Length: 459
Ligand code: PMP
Image (cartoon, rainbow, N blue to C red):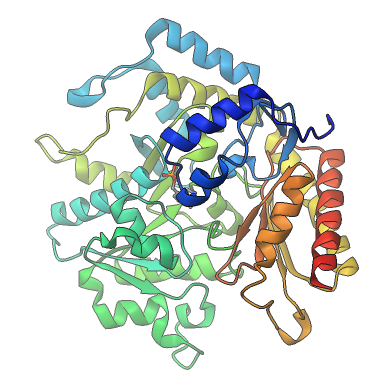
């Protein structure tokens, strides 16, 4: 690693001024950006690291937004993009136009996806995928002669994106309520009430379970259930074994579609090709994005099972839904190369062995620091929590913002992580899937130092 240079170059200072003036950042504090400028301006990346315009090199412990799965500066992905860009960068897929990379990618996805999820509707990202899935599910039920099946059940703490339907399905309060624009027909249930979903009406919180929600709303009004196999932005919440199977059974029992949001989990993040593979569950629809191109192209999609595809294919008129970039040839060419590399280089095998290293590191942190608790990892999707007193469940005072403090202390030490949780108590770790043992240990060492520094501020 290069050493930290605290002097901003004149180029960086100039860019920061322009940023303050003209760039309204996503999911950022606009006043803080105007007051202080951007937190960092990235200039290049290689492997698990990214380097700023000032030459400071950071370990990207979050794969940016859980998406740069093959790491930065991958020349094969760049070459795949370059080749397609210089051959035929962009085509329309409307009115049955098609292109070779989109067709070949659709076939590849069908071969990788579980069960009979054999078709894909392309989008430009995760939110669009979830909006598309919700619309297609409603359309499917209309075609089946059940137009009353329109509602979607979505879980508390879920994150499904920020377009209007996806935002409505998102169960994180700030995102859910932003601008007040929500769609009708989304009902909330509590995540992970395993006994309730299996039918135990005396189980705690039964009333807010998916099962009770179906009974209350009426199965004939419900189109589907949307679930992340492992909740990401909601705090890296891994469901108990048997939970997704129980939801699958509920969907079968009540004739409801199971929509798995694989936007984070898909393509190896959890140590399997898809998150649902960890529990051998086959959903009816699957939203994909992020790791599909490792962030080298803006591409998402909704995978559909044969029944839904065939039903929609019986509709003999134009379906009025689609994006300019649905099936963008350059993004699809990159995705094809990305999937080829994941298989060829046995990336998922690396995820499984690095999961063990990461778990060892988290255990070390938990044993060393009494404030660290609830360490968890599935593949390279991990988190730990900070409590003032884990034994009694005592959180830090809300004014402390412990996760922000430790994430900031990591950033000062050139490691990027992310703070989550309603009490700002969770720190997520999701490094590129190509990470090695030394890099994992370096991350743990930095987190260790950052927690120590945070504890000193408390005294
Ligand atoms: N679903 C999940 C599970 C996500 O984590 C995200 C993004 N973090 C989205 C959907 C939305 O994806 P995008 O930002 O590409 O629209």
